[in-house]
Length: 590
Image (cartoon, rainbow, N blue to C red):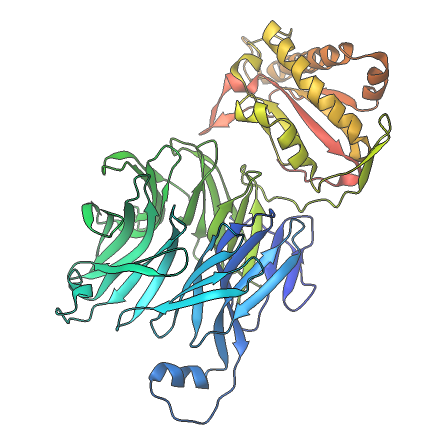
């Protein structure tokens, strides 16, 4: 079940992965946790949660039980923000010693490079902080009803403001117009703020049962969709309520099912529709992920269950630029809980999934899709033989592998032009920029291990063919004109360029041995066709350079493309490229 990651603990507060994996555990006294994560404008990442400080007991009188309990506690929880650079070094670690025990649930970027942080205190107050880019407090807003309140999420708005989503225990005082819609137990509690922290309105919604506000998202027209859950004994109802920008109800869509367990996230997709992450138990009472796509008029477009071997939950979901969805949460068996990362395509079909953690409690709470299509993930890691939770930050690739820390490269010199240029910190980012047009046009796919797949329909080979078509030649000429100068410029770091031929697994009237050998020969011919075409189109000087780099190989059908345990024969007939770095500085994974 587990994807094991080995850690070496360098300091009391931080521990870095023993390998080059981008995985950081931050240790604090007592329990600590990260609940949300965001990318900064400098391409670093920031995460928020809570950390614990030692406290002392002062002998005095107290007016409320929360203050007394806090005073006798050996520790005090505070909102905490941490920031990491591209090489997994912590550049900021700061907590905010507000009154009462308090926790953060959300972090958002502001246009000036600062942050909005949302959270709550243990005595039922809600908290919004606005910070500058150095995490200095610009303002603090503490608000709530007269009864116990709890924030679940802070949602960004197009006007720069925010909406706080949560719940509040009803007052039963019907004369207070704030509670006209609050009928019993907990009710959904929504507050809207301007970008400078001024509250515009605060409203409650609910039934006579136990209602909880979970998440909200802004539609293109400015209305809000609020995700909530109602508990009526053992029965659970999930609801999406659309309200105007002033908080007035437009419609409510309810999901009733005796197997429903919990709701976790709603996001707006690039096509203007919305995706909801739910958990629904199967017939043997095992938690399974349910994803529902819905439009602005409460029509269900897709409703699917992701069947997994172990009990699984997605706490957060985000959309990639290509329409696929990344999700993080937890997966558990009888004795262990691991962090879960999945990627599904735009039709919500599973592309990949992976589990991360050790033999203890590990979970992912939130993710942010980064500019390079990696996912930054925040959550909890528990050390072996320990009962204390620790902050955990990872970067994951969109093929569900763990990302690598950025290599620390030095100056590269273009000998022909005698120009010294400062090499950016990651060759992947250089390649992504160089081939941005081809990537956006879905002609190639660039992986984090510097491998490149040709994915345009006209670039695959027909069955049993290895000679290049005119379309393939035209693209390879264009592709070479970009790739080969890149190899020359960064030759100090590059060991080789592998050109690998691939095939599907079929071969008419052949047994397994014959199929493999015949396809091996065919894959080598495909690799040689591409290598020879790219080589012969260069001048003599460039050809001499390429003889030190080019390596052609045939992989037969060992890397055939599979979807749902079915071979995709068309997309298996291809050629791929991989840049191999010197001194094993790159990840062995895609």
